[in-house]
Length: 156
Image (cartoon, rainbow, N blue to C red):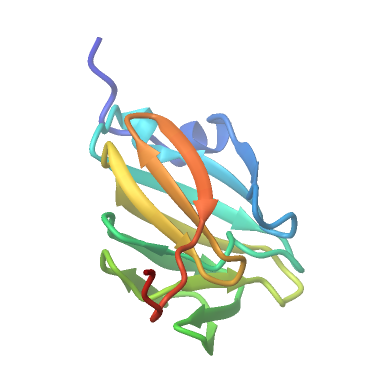
């Protein structure tokens, strides 16, 4: 069966919304509608995301193999990118090439932060979470968290 290519705003609003709590950050709670799934996209993940006031989008992270972007639709907050905080709001675009920089969003406002997020859907990726010293290894649907290797030092 071929997925439908065009979806109205009403169809999107009626589509399933998942609530994701990041396993490494209990304050990272996002409400997501998977637009790419509606259209049958296999290689690109496109999501309509809502983050409530006081919450974060994810754990501070960097993808080694996948690119992603965020386009803010409404609300506002703070983006931390490579340790530097910047205000974000409607119309702002944030793009992250594979390999960096590390990033996270925080909704410190009084209304929901809503954005369009898209990224690659590779079979494999490595995601580092430097604030908590963890690395996620993704391979063909499997996911494993390991300790992040120490940087700068050598082992003998």
